[in-house]
Length: 218
Image 1 (cartoon, one colour):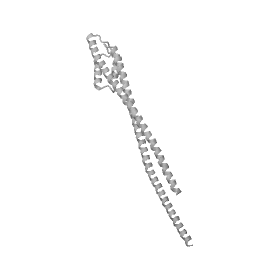
Image 2 (image 1 turned 180 degrees about the horizontal axis):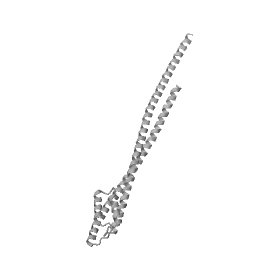
Image 3 (image 1 turned 45 degrees about the horizontal axis):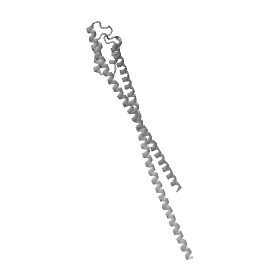
Image 4 (image 1 turned 180 degrees about the vertical axis):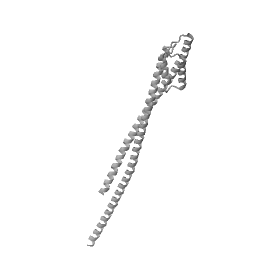
């Protein structure tokens, strides 16, 4: 009987010790699950914030690009109209070097009305128009020669403006190409980053759910 009691006591101690170990392990598992859940919550919040920041940045960049594109379209149209008007006026003046017809007068007036033409050039053109006969071919040789001299100066002025505008529209087009390329790269980078962030967010969400389920099973 004494031996049985001793064996029974020993078995009880072993069972109690085993139970204590199980309780400790369970507590450790629950604590670990709680820590994993807390970590997942922090990561999810950070990832959601990062996604929102990138989406906002992409929206702002898109709005800016739309504004830039609208400005580019307007500026390019202004340059196209100015270049066309200058080329037309140059051809007409070169075809009629000794007189100012209604057609050439209208061509110069159109150039003078262009927004891109500097005020100094407009003053020269308007002065030339005021000094010249707008309808009648010049009969006097000295007067005709004087007109031809001044018209050559106007043609030179128009050619300078033409070269200037062609150079500026070329720079405008290159700047637009660079802006489009930069926007494309930035958009692609933000989109790719958000795809990765979304994957990480989903992983952390699943991690949180798994640990919550594990706690319920304990």
